[in-house]
Image (tube, rainbow, N blue to C red; front, side, top):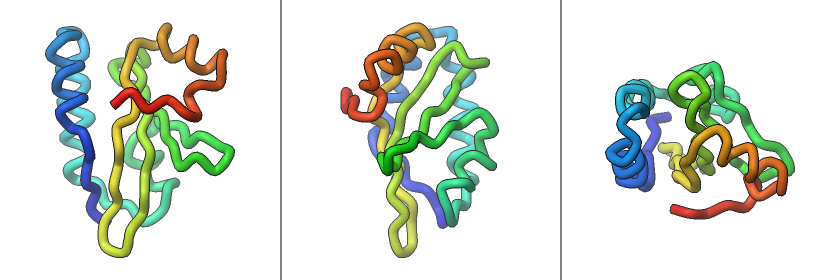
Length: 110
């Protein structure tokens, strides 16, 4: 199924404010445009460094720019399309702080 990204503007704004991330997010977005997912595991096939979060959260963490940045999204597999919702974007160090406090399961900044 094709993927519809919700809150692409969040990615664009983050990349505009973090110049070193721009080219990596551009590549990430290009891969997403060609994605065809049937199951959550297909997310990891498209993005080899993506990690599906547990506890039934339907969340995925993407490593961006060689793991310098992280992005948390939720996903919903519908009848004819997958919806991917941006929930959080930040540096690896910021993500580590979220992870330490288990906030990566609930964060909804965007």
